[in-house]
Image 1 (tube, rainbow, N blue to C red):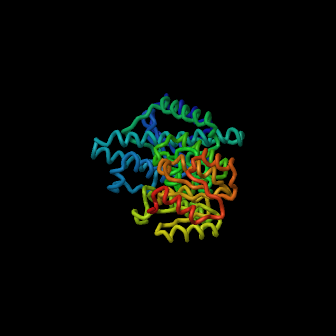
Image 2 (cartoon, helix red, strand yellow):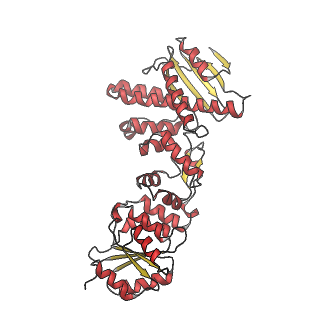
Image 3 (cartoon, rainbow, N blue to C red):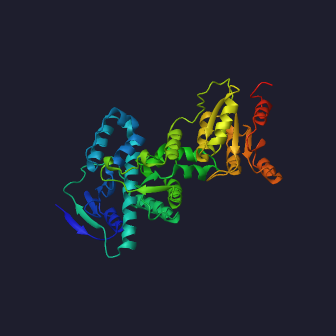
Length: 407
């Protein structure tokens, strides 16, 4: 039985094994909790196990590349070292039509494990130059056959290229096994109002504090480096944070929605639901939305509007305006000019960038009734301008003008 311990680099060991066509297992140890195993057959790399969360990797790649196997529950993996490879081999013997799917699963397993080892090795070199990964050869538990034979030199070249791209994008400190979590959903909303909202919906739909960056990359169909770079940007703004992947899937220390401010919870609830037209009001009756942080103004507007048989929907927190606007799709919007966080000019311009609201009448409400204010309101896309205090006849005339009331 061969069992020898070394402390050279990963690339050195792989180059050494490439020229020796024997069967063995190479164990790589970073700490008591973090270990990997590489399996070789006839000088080729066939499987890899271990890492930060091997079970998560196994189920994620299985669901992605072989979903029909996962649904049939043909594999109930308890260990994710060589047992996974043996089970895949058994399934392949029963059905050769799955060869390309299983080969893709194996390749991506190898890629992820090797990438993680390279990254950890790099971090050790820069943070703890006196420390090295421990490499141990063992032929007591090694494969007796292999249905996938990856050339070591090609595989290593590909992984090095991926790692170099990761470094070029300044992602060196960030592991693909990190779990992003949205800390400030309202700020994430504000950051995306000037752009397409598609990215915002994707982020809020899939980032739940349980998915790793690798998992999110598959779910969102976005390249891993690009997604990680995007999340890192939001982390720098304090909008997101990263969680270390836990030792067990049950131990995620995810913030509960009860820990979030009321408007944050409401945004999260809105955005995790179906954002298609969800107007629960009777379609034939006009719906008036009023965005004003003053309860007095909201009460006055409600009395005026509902007395004419219209539906009324008030928003006192401007952060909630866009999500609710998309949800209920009002027929007209009355918008206060002076509000905290976002003023009426900014919010009006943001609403006009949304395709669903580009033709919705927007009426500015303000006590600043000057020529400059009126001109600026027109520039950002407002339809009308009303001075405060609110005048009932003026409001009704505007509703009639846009055919929301009968003359």
